[in-house]
Length: 580
Image (cartoon, rainbow, N blue to C red; front, top):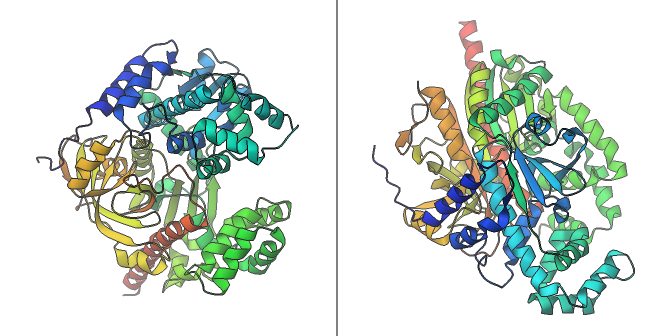
């Protein structure tokens, strides 16, 4: 069938990608400076000032949050799908390197303590994410360097780093003047970097950043092998024989479904309220008072889950966190941490073992007693990045007894809504395959609206799965917006490519309109808006707080209710047949 999606005019984006993929074919190091010109020419919506002398604060914060703190010392980033490639190459001691992480991106990484960072990649999407992030970070680092080096601020920052003085108002005023930032913007930077604020500015002031990258292996077979090992680890860890069980596959996170199913925080309400009063956190206390006085339309359950996360990090809360893990087991929930391959944790939830009295009130559906006779499980994974979603679902669909449903909860940029809104698409254009997928979304606005306190639910939307967050520009988005595509994300298209292969006798096609209405299992996709790139009023550069949990839990409640209702109906029908 002929495509309805027009040419996006994204020649600059494609040139940028061709440039770094051609360079990465070398066995030598590739200097990031060789990508700066094509990166700037792309005019990324997340890095609109890349080619200007003015500091692009949004891009700097965004990139900073997706790189580990040790990036200040890093010169070389080695990308590889496995430790084996490192050990067989120039890094036999990789096992002794220190694991590091970034606050805003899940990716397995190790640092040698000197200047080399190993980043483990699960698919081409990791390259499309990491290379532009490093390039943007280097560009903005060097803008800061030009403004701060050879100024008196360097000595003052050094004194702060050594503990000889504090970051006071005169220093902040001087930083604002030199960096040409407002006080509000400097405060944003200080909040984003936290304890790394002074060390980062000092490192930027003292030297230019000159990143280099290497790609070790990274073939199609390597990615498949990594995914296979990931799945084997799950099947070997969980006693439930997944190859013989019906499975509801959920791609979301590792906290919301567990909180809704175990009610761990809800049963410890009084302890959590005492923590709020004793914490000395004025923001937390003010939020609770507003909820109590019904000044804000907030969910008490969501608030307790938020407080529980903070409490579990304290010495007093650690024993509670351990108790909650034990309670997960009694509720039939197995948590499997990813060890050596994809950085995607998984949870296997046996529906026959859930405890109805523990459930969040919002997911208590009629007929839960029937689940005692269910043989189905929920396989919930921590959502992957881009094309890794395709490889994971292909592996899961191959390895389980029967796929009962695919439910995806992910974050996205919205071109017509606000941060906190929920988008429900039934058309998805995938930039990886160039396919436009048509499918019956299991959810409508009515399924989510009762549980969403702040945002708006937009169903019947059209989404586009892009190759990377930086790999978009205003012209690119404008073309799709004119065609009614308002939901921009990275995983739905790859998941639907895997669905095609699960129901058709061949690999997914390219550049076609694909109808998935004949799928024998349910497909439900929900996206919550975490970015508004047209207005830049709120971007992914700043992490969502308690407010951001509203949309996450509204979607999680809708997904869990859908699964429980469907499985209750399945078991009820089976029991009725036996009685005849």
